[in-house]
Image 1 (cartoon, rainbow, N blue to C red):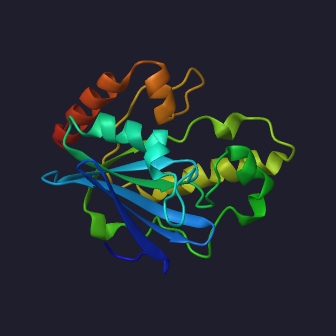
Image 2 (cartoon, rainbow, N blue to C red):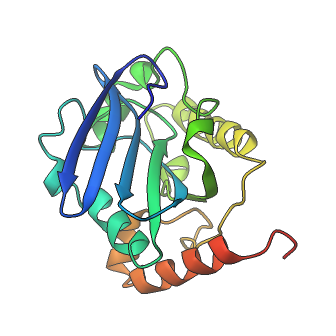
Length: 197
């Protein structure tokens, strides 16, 4: 794998999956889950890195990464996860209490060419509409969503079921709502859809 933001690349294996990520101190810039024989890469835009950081001590217990493997494996897709914000925290509340540190020196969105991405999905949840002590957090989140959407505008977007408020569902919600098979089928259809459709 290639360094994108001058961090350090770590690699671990879970079952038949090779999982790589780039970390730099409190920041994780991307995470790539690849399975031998799978040639299609799906970009997954989430909110912020959770339990996976540095040397990956909690990798096996990371439920979100497991769900992504489960929905992508039948579709023969490798998920590449990036985040709206790179600060790695086990809970969103920890990110919000360190909001001034939410970004590293550089953002990853302009550095993804080497992954040959076939399509992308949004899976960042509903944080843009939550109540925070500071209104500026909502504004910051909404501005970042606009920025990322603009940066990815040349890529094919696969639309997945939304929350009742119209925001993307987090993979944990796919599991809670028993939608993993549906998500897999939508990914297969979206990847195979011709550009004219």
